[in-house]
Image (cartoon, rainbow, N blue to C red; front, top):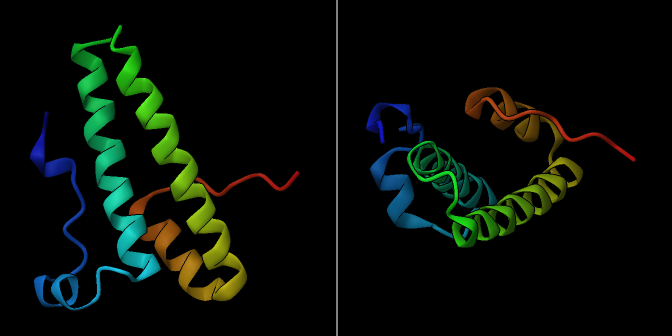
Length: 90
């Protein structure tokens, strides 16, 4: 697991003040997703963790959808900053 691949974007004082922010939650989920992805390189048959990863991906996707409807500019900024692919509209 490589610690340098995680995103140190939000400052410590902002993290401590309001962990309920949508941006902060997306940040936390993105870090957990990247950590689990690196875990699967060593343990490809860890199916219970794969289930957890799918749940986290769904939660992050719902938060991103909410943010895109609420504030499109902040959504695009986060997508570019965290290097997340944009979701396909059905």
